[in-house]
Image (cartoon, rainbow, N blue to C red; front, side, top):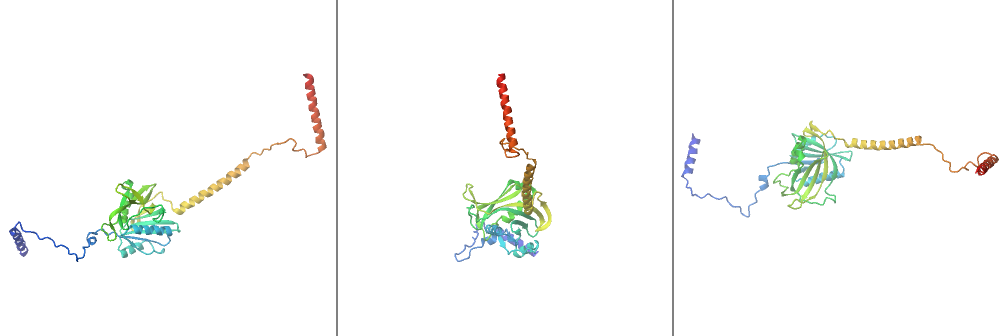
Length: 321
């Protein structure tokens, strides 16, 4: 009852107020007062990406990881993971670092690089084989962008057609997209991430926006992602999709060595068959090659008799004519 009476009193007081009463304006900020923390109020997207590697990657792979850290102001760093540990440890590390996304670089045989993208801890996660790596330090990539600026994400139209590409598009958007009003980011866009699906692979490119008319200049890094598997969980679980055309790098190198060996064996076989089936013919270059073979007196008499026989034939022909 007391609440109902208080509400009635408020309504009566509002009706008794004159219409032309001035509403008090909010107080202005003095020059000595601290600035309001706009980022703290507007920074609602709390995406944090853990970018680190396992032991066994080479120098080029480390440079690629450093370039991605430079381009992503919302990343967190971590020391290298030991090989003896399983991938499930990454979920615990992300929990300690307060990260909900993870990029893991995994090297094999000091020459093959695998990259994991994962949504921690629910999943899904995707595994890629990285090919054709070019880092930002190469001289051919002359573009530049401001450190911490937000990128525009450009996806190929095929990412909206295939189901597994739709899943990867959402995962890439959450990983590479810089949150708005992030404390370490700049409030404008000056470069573009391009994801193109070609030859059953995903081609990653980073371009600088030169002008408003659409002029672009490549910054780097550039690499090609060959999808291997997509798992239901984070760094594990049931496989949702598997690439039927994937061939491991070791298997590919083995096939190249076998093809080179087969070419050598075929060349030897062709050479031996040619030697066996080659026609054995003798050529008489001069009729006097065998003059020093046999009895020279018998050969001389035979030669004289042959000449006499030829002379007799010629004389008979003359007489007939």
